[in-house]
Length: 88
Length: 181
Image 1 (cartoon, chains in turn orange, green):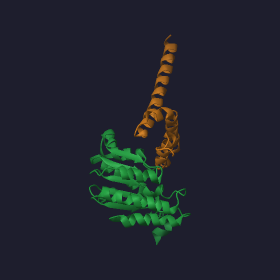
Image 2: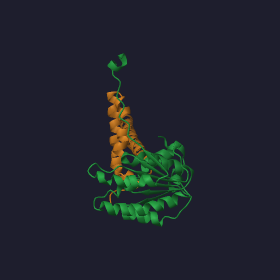
Image 3: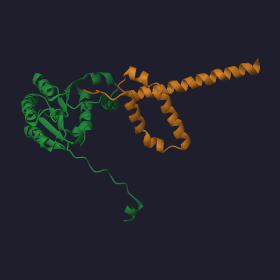
Image 4: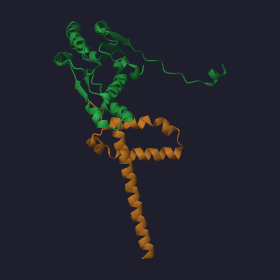
C-alpha cells in the first residue's frame, strides 16, 4: 500500500515544471527572478503540507507573497534606520 | 475524446487505454462532481485529488462542496475490489471504477484465481449499471505477462459499451524543410 496522494514536494515540482515554457520565454534576468520566487515558496513546503489545501498552488503563491512581504518589511526597517541616522 | 461528450446512460462502459485512461477518468469525476454525487472505486491507487480540484475550480468556486460529492474507495487487492463491489448498494449515483484490473494483474495471484475473482465482480458491475451509469477503466497487462490480457477481454465482453483508447504519436515539430515542401 503506497501513498494515496503525491507528496507536497512532488506537487511543487510538477507545478514548477508546468511553468517551464513560461520560464523559457522570459529574459534571463526574469528567469532568475522567477527561480527566486519558486525558491522562496520551497522554504514553506512543510507548512504547505500541513495546510493540506486542495489547490496547493494557492499555498505556494501565498508562500511567495509571504517572502516578498518579509523583504518589504526588512527594507522598510532599514530605510527607517537610515532616515533616523540621517536626521539624528 | 472529450469527457464532456462521454455518453453516461445506465450501462456498463469499459475504457481500455494505457495508464487506464486516468486523466480522462479524473476529468470525468470532476465534471460529474460539479453536478451531483458520484462514487469512485480506485483499483490502482491512481485517484489524485489535485488535478480533480483544479478542474472543479476552473468551473465553480464551490470547490469543497463539489469535492465532498465524491465518495472514494480504494482497493489494494483484487479480493478487496471484489468485496467492495459486492457490498456496494445499487444507487442512482454514477460509479467510476478507475484501473479495475491493476490488482488482478498482480503476479502473486495466479491467473485462474484472478479470472475467478473477476468473474465474480462482473455481475455486480452489471447489477450496479442497471440503475446508474458505470464507467470502468482498465489498462492492458504489462508486456512481461501477456497471458493476463484475457482479463481485459473478459471485462470488455461483459460491457455494453467498449472503448479502446490509444495514445497518439507525439506531434512532430515542423522544420524549415517541411514548410518548403
